[in-house]
Image (cartoon, rainbow, N blue to C red; front, side):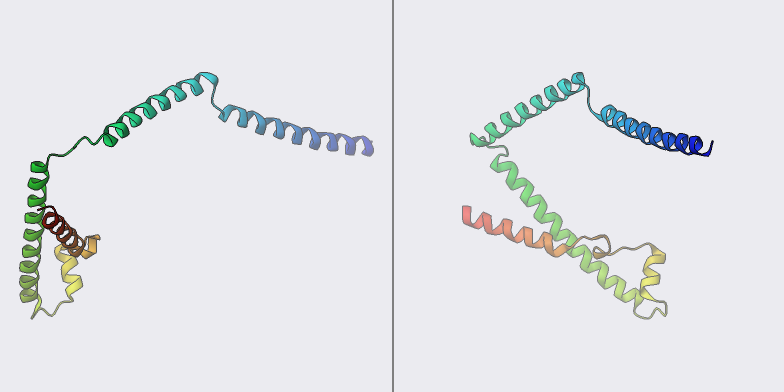
Length: 144
């Protein structure tokens, strides 16, 4: 009786192992795309490739996407905004220094209490925009 019980338990373990293997194979097959899904995905990708090829051919043909007048207007506007940013940052710094000069509170705590964030606190650097502006000005001088 014990031998039969042991043999049956071994068979049960083997059957459970076989069932788990079959279940994992079924899950693997279910995760694969059907033929219809593959065909629709292929058609979608083909249309995307065609759109991108048309776009790259247009770019290679030398089509001017931005008119020089529009480019100049945008660059001038960018330059003006960076200069305004620089002036406002300087004015704020002077004002902030005057306010906190005789303030006994910790400046960081006071700044957080008021909800003020410096450019650096949010990962913005005026110098990078100033450098970009300088490179734009160099390009303008070269093209003139």
